[in-house]
Image (cartoon, rainbow, N blue to C red; front, side, top):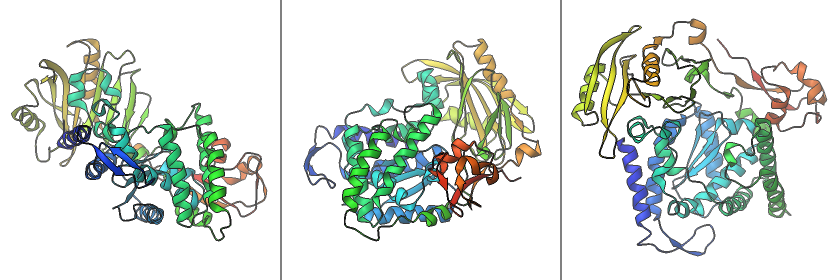
Length: 487
């Protein structure tokens, strides 16, 4: 377990220990006296620790101007809250999933996927206001004491064994301690606060229901009941109706409320849309990663998942699992030296293997004997591969029993690692948003062939732009189109 994860676990246990020493405090958002189990200092500490985990897992989107814009909107909305002087931090994550979440202490996150699907600055203000509401109403403090935190969010590899969880875990464990599921009452309260804060900061809250309608359409297209952002939230259709009523009351009698649609769309020019292949993609069972200059073959039929921090595969019958991560504190070490360090630290009890060469890269491949964290020992198939002076990859895996077919597949996957030499795959770029005015008037379905954005179906384009297929698009109306990747 990494030092960061240990610190998070300690903070979580400290928060739980607060149950015995809890006292009354005034909730900033409601003004009511509540029995609190977690201090605000503990919340701030969890938020600070969680920031590094969130950025490691998802990556921070590399656009300083867009990040500064989102931060400026967030701070404006936060200034209308009951905690204007909290050290708020608003971060855009490099993730295509439509998602937003808050961590204690004023740490708010939105994904580029969510930004792509909103239509105005007022909608952004509504989403940020909702997440700010979770912080000001101290919903995390409420939930921390109601959940067994250490068991949350262990991901795909967690189902296999305590041994693999102990040695193959990533920052996802830290996120599991932090990204708590709020109750529906909490979500409804955050909706109310989002309307209050966005309208209080000068934005038109009547834009907020459109966000929920978009989320409902995304879910319908994906064949899901709810998209990720609202997987534990009330139905977005009902929320659209409810927030419409709240917004109408908040906007009554007020003039000059801001929508800022064009200003918002202008900020989305060149935004990466969908998966970014620079950080890896699969073709069949073969994985390519241009940034690392890597390709490797996974066992056929295995389920796979990858993020900025880990690449994971698991057999359909759960008989085998493997995970590739970047080895920590490995700069300047050979694969063998790195293994010696793990042994000296007591993380590895024994090893059996030998140096190998995988393509142009020096490696060590073999089995490790490790503690299973329960007083026993286990074996892991392992590979350490030096792919550059600064990066060494660590692959850990196992089957059901040593030497079985699944373990042999893990070793085959490790030994399939090669340098990516195909220039087209090595230079692949993501698709991006282009903002363009409609050349003529007509419904979106009729205009679609002339828009030159056939990379996504017309139904997806309709959702992306918040319009219906048969809705009239006016000449000159700005639309979000998807450009082909640049080579």
